[in-house]
Image 1 (cartoon, rainbow, N blue to C red):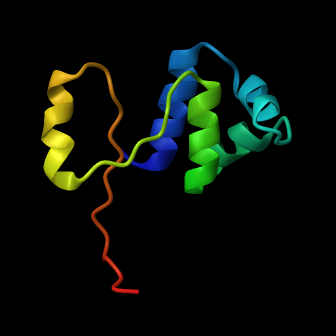
Image 2 (image 1 turned 180 degrees about the vertical axis):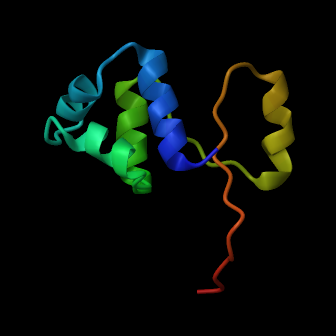
Amino acid sequence: MDATEAMRLIIEASGKSGRQVAREIGRSDSFVSSSLAQGVCPRADTLARVAHACGYELALIPKSEANKLQTIGPHIVIEYEGPVSSE
């Protein structure tokens, strides 16, 4: 799942409208709906704000620990398979 799909999922799970979430994070009323419609990948800080407004927290974990998520309850995993920069 990518970050845009995760954002859509957590908003739906929260029972809030995109407009409500946008207002809670200090964005325009159309921010969420236009971002989702365009498939725009949110920045990490924006995704963290959306997650928090929807009752989630954004967490980064080592890849080696990701398989342990299966045992700790509901979660959303955003996977990135792109190149890793050495910078």
